[in-house]
Structures are given as C-alpha cells and as structure tokens.
Length: 267
Image 1: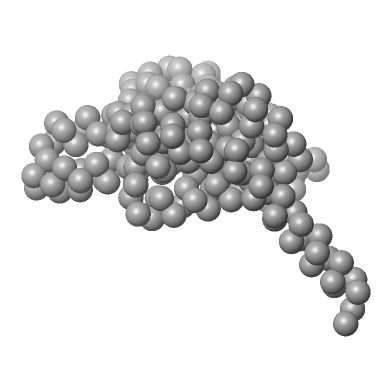
Image 2: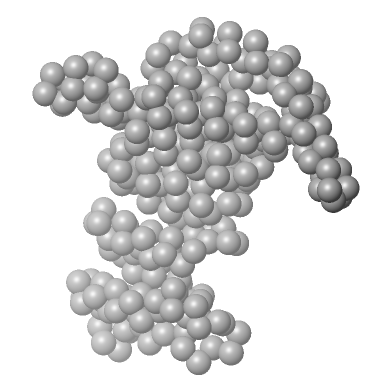
C-alpha cells in the first residue's frame, strides 16, 4: 500500500474530525437562535447568538470548511422550503466566512426570489392569496435580501456584482426603477464593473424620462469603452463593451432631444 496515500487519508480524516469537533460548540446556540426566529422576517445576526468574535476565533483557518458545511445545510433547508432555517443558515454562513461572494449573492437571491413563493404556497397558493398579500411577501423578502447585500457591501465595498444583484432585486421584486438605476450607477463606478452596467444605467435613465441625463451619461461612458483597433484591449473586452450599441443609443437620444447636427456627438 502506498504510504503517501495512507498519510493523505489520515490528514483529511483528521481535518474533518477537527471541523466536526469545532462545529459542536457552535451548533447549539445557532440552532437555538434559529428556533427563536419568526417564520418570516426576524433575521438577527447569528454573530449575536454566538458572541462577538467567537465564530472566527474558534474556527481560525477552518472557517472556509465550516462555512461550506453549513452552506450544504442551507441548501438542504432550501430544498425543503424551510424559510426560517434557510434564512438563518445563510446568515450563519456569511458570519463564519464573509469572503466568498457566492454566499452573499446566492443567499440574497434565495431570499428575494424563492421565499416569496414559499410563503404564498404556505398561505394556500396563488388562487387563495390576494395580489396585495403577494406583493407584501415580495416586498418583505426583498427588503431582507437587500439588508443582507448591504452587509456584503460593508465587506466588499468595491464589488460590482453585489451592486448588480441589489439593482436586480430593486427592479424585479420592488419595481423601484429609481433605486435600481442608482445601484447600477454604483456598479458601473466600480473598478471591476462589467460594461453592461453602464449601458443598463443609461437605459434606466431613459426609461424614467431623464433623457438629458442619459445622453450626458452615455457620451461620457462611450469615451471610456474599448473600441475596435484599440491596442490596449482584448477582443473579448471590445466585444462585450459594445461601443457601437452605445453610440447608436446616443444618436437615438439626439434625435429625441432634437440636438442640432452641428452639436451631435462624434465620439
């Protein structure tokens, strides 16, 4: 038998056993906090149940492993449409290891998009629940998700994907175009922003009737985009920037705003 394989197996087993031991002092207070949750919206930080700094202090370098284990539990609760357990486990995972964006974004999407449907089904289904009540479920769960994303942004203030997730919830769940536009503006301002964030912000300004603002924004935005023939940009960057589409939208706005030809944007 290969002794290296035996040693590797022993190390893995030891790590898992240690992680299990380290989870034990966390499980009882965490699950007590979960059982104390009201079914809908009491999302107190699990850090309070565990004690300030206790989570990271106890887990040390194993917090990524422990967070992954709790994420598996969160997905099991999600599969069973167990709303309070899923919400609390999402909070627990992000408290244990706030570094992965995956936990924050997927957790927020579960809360904002899946949980309103669970609440409607639990209340008797779409035929039994009034439109006003359905809207209330949407709004309440969206607000919980947005609060989670604000906590995420405190950890990752320059992460465009968090602003985009926030914007989509504001647009799709709250139907708040102004808030969604502002979140897309913030996304576009981040150093790792995808090019579509700037295009969508301009489109949302136009949708709200703020055409002059959209015109000014898109002209400024166009000047920052890589274009065909740019030596500093990759083909992928040029393709996703879609500078030609942005220029077309600028010219459309010029026609709508009746901008004189001599003042038309040349790029």
